[in-house]
Image (cartoon, rainbow, N blue to C red; front, side, top):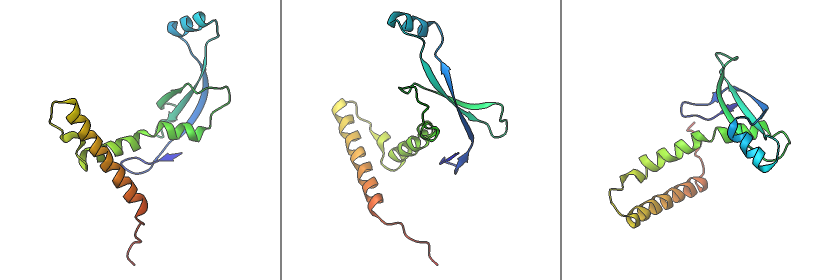
Length: 135
């Protein structure tokens, strides 16, 4: 599976396992509710250099007993890159970190204007056709 990252597309192997919630807080919660311990889904990203060693683990508490789509879970787990890219643009291009005031209304106005500018840029990019490379 591949996903976009700052240094280019990354590739790794993933697997999905059903696990049972454990530990004292989980047992107390189940006992209080009169239910069994809950099943969760463990998404495992394998390290390409050491396939036997998990590189990252995510615990998903999705409702229902049906196996979730692996592609969907990977996409959700890897949204961090998109969030970091968006935040970097808010800081570097639009100046969300330039506010030096001390009041809530001032900060709120600043963040509102920066967010409106981000929306404008996103709409402009969506409407502007991509130019073909020169021949």
